[in-house]
Structures are given as C-alpha cells and as structure tokens.
Amino acid sequence: MINVYPASSRRSVDLGWLSSSYSFSYGEYYDPDNQSFGALRVLNDETLLPKRGVGAHPHREMEMVTLVLKGKLKSEDNLGKIHTAGFGEVLRISAGTGLQHAESNPGEEAAHYLQLWFLPETAGLPPSTEVARFDPAGMRNKLLPVVSPEGGAGTARIHQDATLFLSDLDPIHMLAYEQEPGRRLYLKVLEGSLIVNGTRELGRRDAARIEGVPDLLLLGGRTGARFLLIDLQ
Image (cartoon, rainbow, N blue to C red; front, side, top):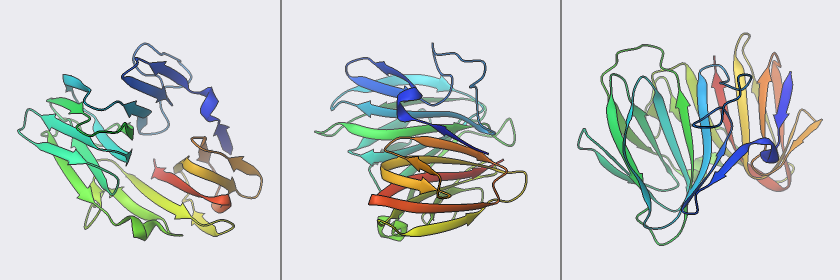
C-alpha cells in the first residue's frame, strides 16, 4: 500500500520568524488518526529567519534528528554541547532521561531544515548528542545512509531500528529498493519530482507512507529529485 500525502495536505503554522509544516500531530495541531508512522512521531519542515531562534526547552524519551537543507542551524544544550550544522551534516539528539535544548540561526540567510523525532527502542537512556558529517557527492544516484542503528563514518547512530537515506536522483534515472516483510518506508521529496513504481508521482515536499510493497522502484522526474527515504519498524 502506497499512501501519498501532498505537501498541501499538511498543517502549517507561520509565526513570521519561524514557519513550520507538520506531517503528524504536533503542538496545538491534533489529529487522532495522524499520530505517528511506526516509530516516527514527528516530521516538521521548518524555516527559521536569520538571527532568530527558539530558547532552551525540555525534551525526554525521544530520538531527535535534524537535517539542515539550506543555511545554518546552531544547537545548544545543557550538556555543554554546541553545534552549528549545514547541509552535509546531521544532528542526532537522544533526549533520554531529560535534556534542555535551544536552536538558532546564526547566518545571514533563512535556515531550512527537517526536524524528525522517533520513539526510542529503550527508555531511560542517558542524554547525548552527535553530529555526523557526510559527503553530499555520495547521494548521486545512490541511497546514502546518514542515520542508522549502527552509526559509523558519516552516519549518526540512533537508538531505534530506523535508517535514514538521502539521494540525488538524475532525471529518468531509476533506483530499486527492497522492503523487508513487516517494515515500513517513509518517502519525502525535498526537491524536484519522483515517480514511485510507475504509478505515483510525488512533487516537491510531497510524501508517501508505504507498507506491504516488497519492491520499490524510484524514477527521477524531468528535473531529477532530491529525497529522503526512511526504513523503519
């Protein structure tokens, strides 16, 4: 089953200095039928204006991943860790038993980024943070893992059975992916367009939630596609 969620179907909030698009229930937006997709609990598409930020706020029992798509995002926490990330870097925060976190845009241009939260496999973990740096050239017509349970060079380690891939697909280039039984795939087009299994076309910021489809064929549209693919329980 492939369920497509157009970009226009998401709930959006614009505070002037921060705009967000929610894929799942978040904050004041509540939909009892749209709480999560497997272990994926939050996926917010956000834009933060220069020299603005969100002050320190608490988190618990959540695996949090930030993917910066454009600009710079600065992260600070009460563990004394300060990171400034751009495209080619991924920030992972394990909130565990409790952590205070703040983020801001130190640059001169708007920061565009994705905030993803996953339920942890195990409760009560000590809080921790990590920045993994990957080579965007490795995304060219390939699925490049940037977050996984194992971690490794260029890949952040998450405490959940989920792997995040990024890809830049050339026009009319195809990638195949085999989905294991009992697992889910979440697909989000970041730029361009993507044709899924020859029948579903996803445009910029469209998403698909995929279950029970063992063979996935991804074809780049006329201008190609940059996309995120998540394999999870």
